[in-house]
Image 1 (cartoon, each protein chain N blue to C red):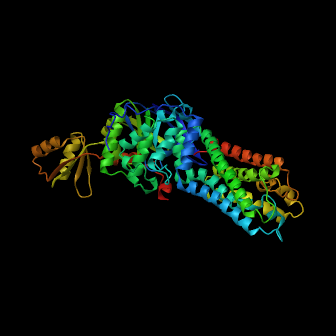
Image 2: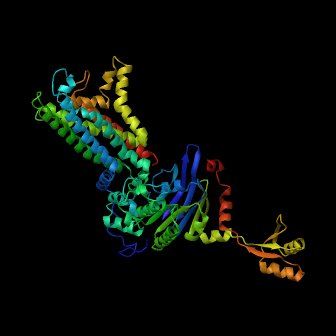
Image 3: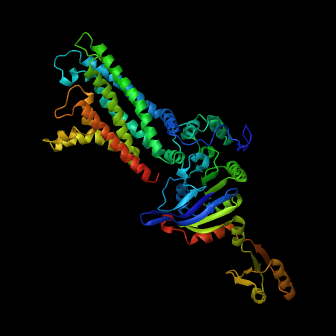
Length: 272
Length: 302
C-alpha cells in the first residue's frame, strides 16, 4: 500500500473519472453484474439444460401415441420442461435484485446511481435480453430435439407452422416475463426468501387456490393471472375459459408492467 | 463542501437526526463524532441520498447529491456496513461501479493498486478479511477521484499499518483541497486525524469547532497534591484563589494553580509535600462527559 501509484500522484487519475451517469453505462454495469456471479450463470444454465433434456425425455416417453393425454400429443407437449424453467427463472429474477439487498451491494449501487430508477430499468433490460435469448433458444432446441426423437414414431410438428412457432417462442417469452415478475416482487419485498415466496405464490399457489375455493368461477379469474395468461400463448391446447393468445400476452405484459411500476414507486420513495 | 441545513430524520416516533445544521469545509479533515446510535450513519446516508430526510436538507457543493451529473466524481463514500456482493471479485465489484459513470478500467486498476489489493483483484470478495473488505471500500470511494469523501468508521477492522495508511491518505486528500468527512465513535482516533470536529448526541449537534479548541476546552489542568498537612495547605491555596477539592483518600485536587505555585506556597509555609503531580484532563473523558447526557441507554442496552 502506498499513496504513490505507478503513475504518480493520486491526483492524476488514470483515464476519465468525471463521466456522467448514463443509462447505457448502468446497463453495462448490470450486464457485468449478471455475468460475474457464478450463481446466476448456474441457474440460467440449469434452466437451459433442463428444458432441453426434459424435452428429449418427454418426447422419448411419448413416442407411442396410444393412450397419451391430449397435452402430450400437441406441439407444446415436449416443452413441459417449462414447469422447471419457470421455477428457475422466477428465482433468477428474484436473485438479481434481492442479492443486492442481502449483500448490502444496493447501497454502493444506489450511491453510484442516486437517481435509482436507471438501475431498475437496466436490470430489467439486461434480464429481458439475456433470459429472453436463452429461454427462446432453449425452447427452440428442446422442440427440435423432441421432434428428432419423435420422428418415425408419430407425426411431428414444424416451426414453419404458425401456431407451433407461437407456442415455442411463447414458452421462452413466458419464462422471461415470469422472471420479470419475480424481479418486481423482489424490488418491493427486498429479501430473497420473502420475494421467492411471493413469486411462487403468485405463479403457482394463487391460481390453484382460486379454482379450489371458487369451483364455479375461480378459473375465469385464474385465466387473467400471470400463469393463466401465459398458458394462452405458450401451450397448443387452449384451457377451458382461457384467453386467446394475443390477449393473454397483453394481460401478462400488463402484470409485468404493473409490477415494475409498483417497484419503481417504492424504490424512488423508500430509504435504501 | 457539505452543508446540512436543519437536517432531520424521524422513524415513526423516534427522532434519529434532529435539526442538524453544520458545514464541512474543503481542505481539512473533519471528524464526525458521537456515541453509537447518535445518528452519524443516518446523517451520512442522507448526504448520499440513500435515506431521504424527513425535513431539512443536505447539499454537496450546492446541490443535492442525486442532482449531480457525475455523482462518483462528486462524492466518494465508504459506508459502515459492507456493501459488496461476496460472490463477485474485487475488480468486478469496482468495475461494475465504474461502468455506471464511464470511469476507465485503468482507474479501477489504479485504485486497486493504491489500496494494495492488486494481488487479490480476481479473488471473490466473500473470502476477504475485515481489513481487506475495508480497503476495497476505500478503493470504491476513491474510484471517481471525488471532491468530497464521506467515510463511516474507516479504521474499523484495519490493523495498525492500515490505520496509519488511511490517516496519511486522508490528510493527503484534504491537502489537495478536497472535503474529507469521517465518522468515528472513538475520540482518540479523531484527535490524531481530524482538524475540525462535529460532535452529535441523540441526533443533536453538540459541538462544531476546530479540534484544537475542543482539546483546549477539554483539557482542564489540575494538580494532585498529597501532604500530611493537607487541611492547612488547602486553606492557604483557597485564599490565594485556587479551587481545591479533597478526595476520599485525603489527597487534594487543585485547579487554577500550577504545581510550581503550590510547591513555592508549601515551602514558604514549611509544609511537607509527599506528592505533587500535574494531571492532564483526558480528551476521552471530556468527550464522554459531553455525550453522557445524550446517551440513549434504552437503545444501547439492546
